[in-house]
Length: 635
Image (cartoon, rainbow, N blue to C red; front, side, top):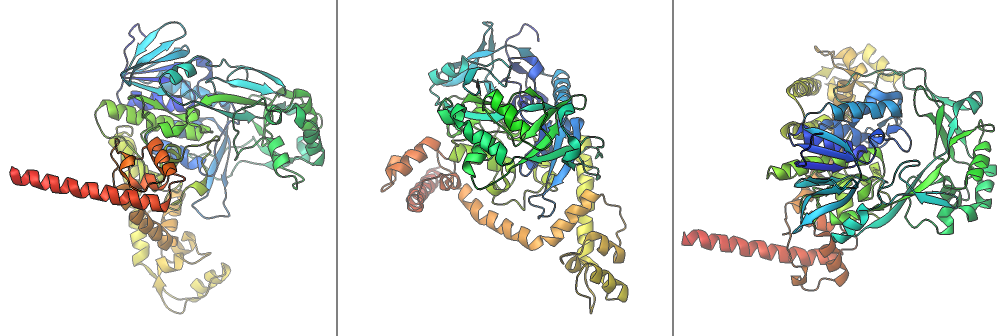
């Protein structure tokens, strides 16, 4: 970094959101500064060093399609990777990779330090500088002032962070890290509402003290896999994950020590994650369950440290030892790092526009856990979108706001800014109404054109995509035109997969649509003249097999998108809507929805109130049309 203090974009924080934001802003041509409180914790995997799982893997692929870095970082550090939900439909199948946390960090460090237009600097931001409701820059603990018309806050769990282990608590970021303790007061002074949330992590144990032979082993997939759309798929061998379970003894230890839990004694104020609860919350919340799965997962290739997935706890250390020793295979396990809960400050995300810019201060954006989310994937997605929109705003261009039918990122951000959250928000497939449209395999078709338009995808990558799309489209067209005749050989193959015989020739697409019939069978009797990859074959098969369901979802999207075209002015006076319930008015005024569709998704706004709002908006549009017509006549 040089002595200049003027930038286009300043990113506060160097976690998963901060890294994606910094790289995107710089790659889009903006002079960017990332200020992180400790350079060695860039892209820190403070919880489990894994990327992916249902819905989260979709986010990582979408980050990649838009020009982000997370998929490449995951692939560069993968030790173990598997498909999840393979027995279910394509809408919920997802990759999950166990990553080497050191290699993941190193990948981002190299990317940051080798990106043009990007400076990185270690310091703690203590104040945002705001003038006339516009961001002007930030001030740091060293008394330095950096100026920029766009600032992105990606403070993670460091903002007002406090760690709890039993009845012991102290200011801290992720255990052993420095907390950012001064910025919160500056945010409150600027008029923002600030709340408190809680998350946690598990004990880490020494690999040599585990009886691995007594546990169920999970090997990495023998199929070459990767997250990056343009990446090299690989098979990863030599590192496995293992499964153990809690038991009645574990649960008894927990129940006997709840009085020593900060979670149940009232010491923790923040709300914890419902979808990733601590082991004590599971035992209390599900008293009829005699056991819970615990996964033992490595954190790095050259480390003996093992992460105990699904065993998050904030109980005292002596209790953690007893709990761990009660697990099969862990009777002699030694704890390297204790589990803990961490509380931190966040800003309720209804204070944001869909672009992730704050409504109160122009040019100030928020991304990641400051918005109430959990997870590396959710953070990375928000960081990328915040940076894209910050740069577009500096160019006086319209923001990129992804629709719920376009991307999981669209669902994530719309949920946050429209509904808010009172607990750490985790992306789930069940949150997505159109998940058959938002699959792993078609992410490039959905989002790469946007990445290309904003300048984050180069010519080489685009050429590869267009070639791939042509191959897929040509093969789909060929299968719809081809016919397969009835024959003894065909019917024998159909009998092998439990499918009825043919009595006459049928379109190859009709046969492929049958349960149990796959592309391989079709290609035996109607071979393609081109060679397709497994991924291309998968897309062809899905598009044909699920055509009816896909078209139905597109019709639903078309109907509902009509509501998204009805704009609501930013300064709309909800007091002008006669008969509107006061609760609905308050919620509408707080969220300030940009469209009627967004208004319809605000929790607590009744259908009757939406109808009243629709009438007023329609009347306003009609008056505007009449006025514009009169002005044209006068001209």
